[in-house]
Image 1 (cartoon, rainbow, N blue to C red):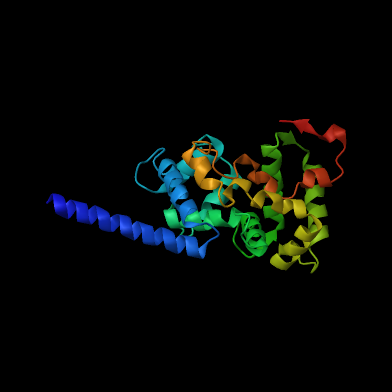
Image 2 (cartoon, rainbow, N blue to C red; image 1 turned 90 degrees about the horizontal axis):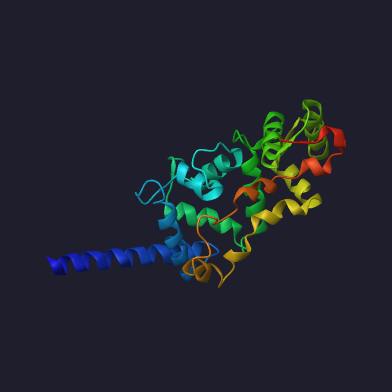
Length: 239
């Protein structure tokens, strides 16, 4: 029996090693980095429910240090990481989604990810009501309050700048043009400690725990329309 258990555990380790090797070959991570991410994944997936899966509450706890706080950007990130759309994030989904933030990931993948983050209704367009919701969420994260008129002015300015076809919404190709004019949008999509040689040492050294990736600063992945729009000082107020 002892020999059987040893063989069973050994075969499981080999299978896991093969899975990690496949993930390394299909993402921007090395095999060692995938191993390090597995240690991080185990920590995150057992923070509330110890079942080897990351639930939304655990994801929010990692991002916001709060498992119940409502946050539009955290919700959208969870939805995008949950590739199977089954309400949990498995290890493979975790690695493949996190790979987009790697310094070596293709810029086109990063751009498409931010677009999907903003495409709240998953229609292939960023529509006016989605844009307004995103601006309000961003203002909330920045602890700012603007009048409805100013918020509408921000939305109008953004649509006017990005909507080349005049259909009142922003398509992916139009989004690419916006990013070309505002390259700072994409800065948050590259996380420096994911570069080769850094990730495994940081995790093993305990320097990366729950502040693992794109914390609340993910809000800045969306253009800072507040700063780009002329807003009278009298309209700005802290929340």
